[in-house]
Image (cartoon, rainbow, N blue to C red; front, top):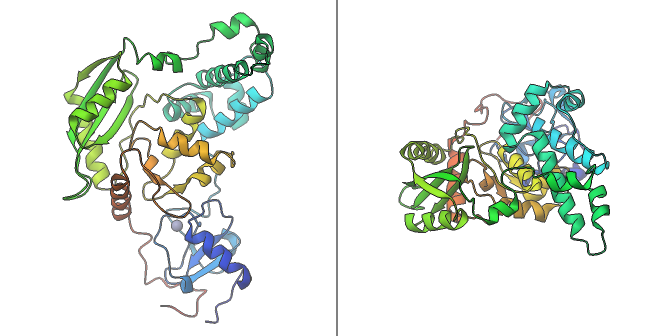
Length: 377
Ligand SMILES: [Zn+2]
């Protein structure tokens, strides 16, 4: 092997280890001599043989060496946090700064360079609430946590949470569904549900899936062996709601299952996600992971700008109640091991295998030999 290397070979072993772990945050690109394509380390493409890999500090260096950017991981395009996540961070900063009141859409538009309409729509569709409702929820959570300090006076807690007055603090019920109304089991709500057979793999990983929705969107999607147990779980979770079987929802559920079996993305449906502000952010981040890719818990924590929150991220993944639509199955341990899954590790394995098999093949060009290589397999 006499290939020219752009990165000292002593450093390459460490880069190779990062590539093996598909470390999406690693700041280099790698090129594959046999295909002539270069990728980000987190790309979902098949892992190349070590001897065919070359490392470059950035995509410009890989292009100069004659490699083409991968069409899937787009290593030549800058990574930007998605708009909803960007807005989450701005709202968190607004709260952390001690400012009271809201952060108007017009101001968010200035800060992101997007229109108020685009922000409202992207945010609502990603997190199921408006930016104003999200900020109100952050503030309520901050207030509750301030109050839980035994030496904190109520007045201090009100100020630390950015409420302009005590009456404001008490009157701000941010959403119809606060944690306390959840504890009451969704009293008075109408929830439609459907149960369908669900075999995630021929002859094995059989069972059923149950989905449920409110007027706002899908609020539950679970897998299980027995329809009765699935229904009992739903009943326990929403014990004060009126549960109604729905044929229309059954049709949607069959489509969701068919897509999952074929490794295709879940149809984009309105969701009614119920969780803390942090859980909503994690679930939104999960929804950004493309089919065929996985992330580790620590990668997700870094993507959320909270690298030390790995365990909280793992908990948020484990408490997801809408399988597939919030694809928590795409999170694995940083060792690459499957780690846990709320609905059984065999189902997780089957889902990931279907997504690996179903994805379009990576640039499928074994005949396009990279110009920068003097040897090939
Ligand atoms: Zn790629």
